[in-house]
Length: 266
Image (cartoon, rainbow, N blue to C red; front, side, top):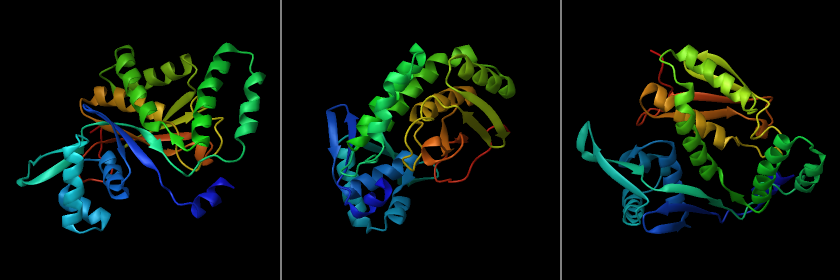
């Protein structure tokens, strides 16, 4: 299977970032590792050194290069202004890898295009078919889908907003079903956990062993960020594309250096 083949292949992938100067291609594995860390949260120099396991001089050299290229930036740590907090200031467009996430089953997936008579289902399949075709060639556009989801979430927020969180999530559930995005159920409020069934984005995707609802997570991040008045993450912990029976998103506050969920409703 594809997953086994991946272990035998050497990943010679690159990351693509959009800066004010244009597209920047990241080929360095070390730089890619640093950027993957910073995509999860802002991070101090010492924590980057700790997570990468590299020397301070090596990390410092790569951080400075990323700053010079306009991909990341830093600000003083409010608790100790002698320390720097690094963050991504550019837009992650996607990844191109020598490892193809899909090697089997894609042709069978494409063959299903003619089976759909409903226009909405047909265009939904077209969206997923394009994504499968890109994955088959080792191209991951999740970052772009995530950014698109954020734009959509910011746009629809005014139609969903409510001062009451329970009413707000009820509006989200109605919006999801009305627009045929699937069905959502609020499983918990401490932290906020949302289960999504019949997911339009990934239900029929081949299993790729990782979460695939970048567009949905972008929508949820945007609307909950606006609702709570500060940035949040929508972490997808379960997904049809991982073999789960539903998708599950955990809404947590973006907080420097804290890997644990912080209550949003208190």
